[in-house]
Amino acid sequence: MQKALILGGGLAGMAAALQLRKAGLQVELWESRSRLGGRAGSFVDQATGHTVDYCQHVGMGCCTHLLDFLNETKTLSAWRRHSTLHFYGPKGDHVPLKASQFLPPPLHLQKLLLGWPGLAIKQRIEVARAVHKLIRLEPTKELDRQSALEFLIQARQSPGTMERFWSTIIVSALGESLENVALGPMRKVIVEGFLASRSAYEVLIPEQPLRQLFGEKAARELQDRGIEIHTNRSVRRLVFEGERCVGAMSSHSDGVSQGDIVVLAIPWFHLHSLTNSETPESVRRVFEAAGELKASPITGVHLWWDRSWLEQPHAAIVGRLPQWVFRSPWLEEEAESLAWEKCAGKSHHYQVVISASRDLPRDTNKLVEMVVDELHELFPASREAKLLRSRVVTDPHSVFSVTPQSVQHRPAVDALLTSNRLALAGDWTVTGWPATMEGAIRSGNFAAHACCEFLDIAPPELPADLPYSWLAQRLIRQSFSP
Ligand SMILES: Cc1cc2nc3c(=O)[nH]c(=O)nc-3n(C[C@H](O)[C@H](O)[C@H](O)COP(=O)(O)OP(=O)(O)OC[C@H]3O[C@@H](n4cnc5c(N)ncnc54)[C@H](O)[C@@H]3O)c2cc1C
Image (cartoon, helix red, strand yellow):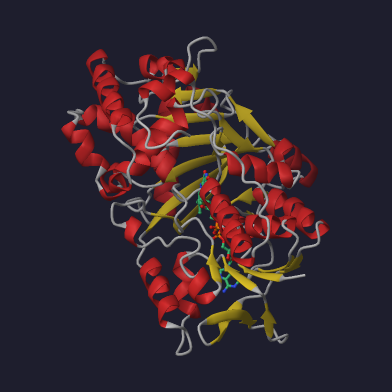
């Protein structure tokens, strides 16, 4: 049996491991931390004892590789699918939006345009015009090198429309501000995330901490399938015989592990730590280029209150500092059983997500104060609630910035396969997706596929994208038939 060595146990590494195992390879996976899951993980808050995600993670109906991975790892039932999105306007007006069951995509979301909070009629017409222009663009690679903002300026979008409509969607979906993102990813979000298929826009929210889902349940499933997992094992260097990568050396005493094929699935900002005088020039060039990718931070503001104040499971907020608010109902039970000392009865955990958060105040007390003030303005019921505890978590490397420059730094998963027998995986590789769970899992699946072809083994079938509706196929310009 041929052996694959996977380095990095985030979603990309886990997906690659699963696919290569399914293809019949012996698979060994190294992860430097104590659990798998990488950025999609959780921490234990010392004061409450709660296991809380670093930051809320959300999937969408169009994330077919994510859905397949959750299904394969028996964790899908812990995610709830929401077909109603709860938007809140800048003045706190609640607008629940759901797709029409009768109109075919892309018309099924006309309510999203008609009901979008905080837009005047003139601005809704502006949006419709720009969306039409966007879907008529041919989705060539060139769009990834162009600026989304320039497109919107040319499509005569007013500042209010930019802020209330485009920014709200783009910052949440791409984790980067509108002025920095490329046109290709913006088009992808609008077309594949909303317009092409009926269920694409639906939101998937986990109902258990990510640590339990990916770090425990999915990891156990991988092990049950025969994948050998080593946590707390960090790659110190890749081992090459000439140009060919034959294994890796860890900081662990066990030394070197070999593989017929090696999949490197660590994040782009750690690649530099693996280059040394023995690194082949081709590998060094790819690592250096990927290392140039810029990162964008996402901030999770965790708030514990003495009572619940939001009826809906989530709130997407337009034109305000908090971009999304999520309730964590499962923590109420946990709080009771733990009898958290500060809290007489239940505590209610909420999470406020702020993407592209580089301009937030550094003083976390000040930030919490600003967020709570805005929540009080938007949700009058929150004024009755007492804030028991807060915690701010910012990951400066949350996602890579999908700028027009990023395309030249993202390597294909097989960029080093023929020359160095080294496959690459991670949300930062070429996947056609921005940095998301879907992008990471796609990269792992694609890397595994490329390895199988290289080793001349039949690869497992990849999940299909959601099909375009008959009307979407006619209205939306495509370079190929999906
Ligand atoms: C705050 C935040 C919010 C987010 N929100 C969303 C969201 O709502 N929806 C969404 O789809 N995505 C979201 N994302 C993005 C998503 O989490 C990532 O795109 C995805 O998890 C990346 O997976 P990955 O496997 O490519 O990389 P990683 O998760 O970074 O995994 C790489 C792994 O490699 C390990 N590693 C590093 N160096 C070594 C070494 N030397 N040896 C061995 N192992 C090593 C790391 O410990 C890590 O486990 C968010 C990310 C963050 C941080």
